[in-house]
Image 1 (cartoon, rainbow, N blue to C red):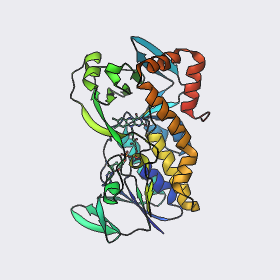
Image 2: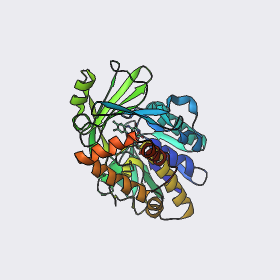
Image 3: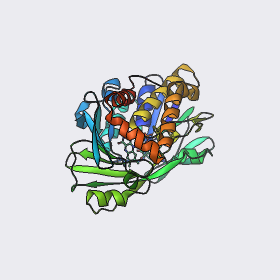
Amino acid sequence: MKILIIGGGPAGATAARLLADSFDVTLIQDRDWDKPCGGGTKSKIFDEYSIPKEIIKHVLDYVIIQYKGKKTKIDLKGKNLSIVIREEFDKTLRDLAQKKGVKLIYGKFKGFEDKKAIVNINGEKILFDYDILIAADGVNSSVRKSAGVAEVPKIITHYARIKEYRVNTCEFFFDKELGGDYYAWAFPHENKTHIGSVGESFSSLCNYLGVNVKPKGYFIPTWQENIQMQKENIFFVGDAAGHVMPLSFEGIYYAIKSAEILAYSIKNGLDYTNEWNKRFLKEFKFMKRLEGMMKKTLLRNIMIKAQNINKIQSISVDMWLGKFRV
Ligand SMILES: Cc1cc2nc3c(=O)[nH]c(=O)nc-3n(C[C@H](O)[C@H](O)[C@H](O)COP(=O)(O)OP(=O)(O)OC[C@H]3O[C@@H](n4cnc5c(N)ncnc54)[C@H](O)[C@@H]3O)c2cc1C
């Protein structure tokens, strides 16, 4: 059976790697690039997916939450957060897939013709046939558009890489004027800091940090229940299916995990949407509810201040680590 995967980010490269032992897998990636991202991900994925740890740039055992002039240290109970450079991380995942026998082709998916995928390779139009097509082509998925499937809901984020403001760990800014309805962030990156905000508050963040920088914009999915994950023999995964955790906006881990669920479902003839829902629906719905509560000032106050209570902070971290599920 031929499987064609469009997009070789964390979702596509992982799906390719996990399917390669059973199928003829071709992975189409448009380019090597540093995808806009904080690059923060749960450290456990390196062991779970045998990803070489040499590419980790920082391993962090705490993060800082800033709110109303107060900094709260969140103890992550070990070195559980890793920072990677996306260009290197994504390329490593594609290399791992290739080692398993995946054919990696650099080209850009352009649409469909006679039930085949059109891929532009060095200016030449090539048609690829497939039994299954996996769309892992990110938040702006052109496969979704070409297949006539509704786009994933999304929000603009602004981000920049700066040298002026240095951090030792990830800092999250929860004041409304800095992070809007969500949050703003500053993550350490070797000799730079990546800063960003979800929504439209980037200039206030810059004022607060005392830097003057022009941001770049990029979308991030805002997950909702019932985002379509399959149309006939086309499956959507990662950002292309909106698989970003509400409130935390963590996407790398969930792209990889969702790719694993998809690979497992295809191999075992199971319903992918069903399998994904069994594993993640409750958790995503719970976080979506918290995200909604955080939009209300009073509840935001209560929820963030509660992180100063050891027991509540410990439960939040355990939830993030997946030590218990809702
Ligand atoms: C500013 C910002 C900061 C973020 N910070 C974090 C963070 O710190 N931690 C975290 O966990 N998540 C973060 N995220 C979310 C995270 O980046 C995504 O959820 C994650 O990259 C999703 O992986 P993916 O493989 O589904 O999609 P992508 O990483 O987007 O990969 C899709 C790939 O497909 C390729 N592609 C697209 N179209 C085509 C085409 N037509 N043909 C061929 N190839 C194509 C793209 O080049 C891309 O490499 C952040 C997002 C943003 C915007």
